Length: 162
Image (tube, rainbow, N blue to C red; front, side, top):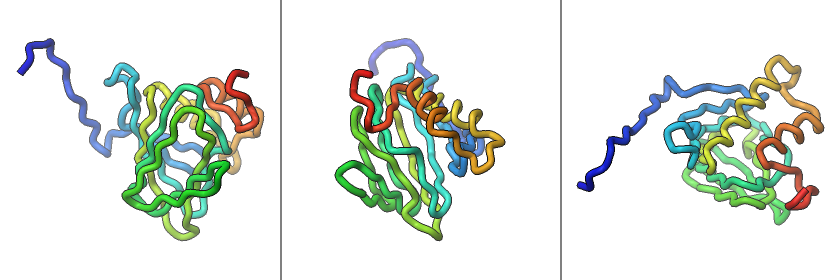
């Protein structure tokens, strides 16, 4: 084994994951980048039946991977819908326009999602605070776009260098 300083591993038991409510979605934070020098974050996103995720958008700085762990999640892109079922993985690189929704009206959907860099998980924390107590749990278009822009995330009509 190479000689190097001790670097600890980190286990987050499911019962200790930070749980955020973002409107009707539940986001459970397992890694927020604090153990990876912000190279990666890891969350699960639970979508109740018939629930949509965020508005259509793209990211300037970060990659996302969505591994479907339960149900069917439909990813919408300008090219059309992509149906992902349990065990499928969707890769969303910077610049890719997308959104997602639960593909079932009767079953819960869930994804394990990673984002690089890891600090993107703070977007979910800000959304959770901003939507707490709102009827329907949804922000207006202007508020949503403001929070998205803080994390290099934009609606499809915004050019790559706003």
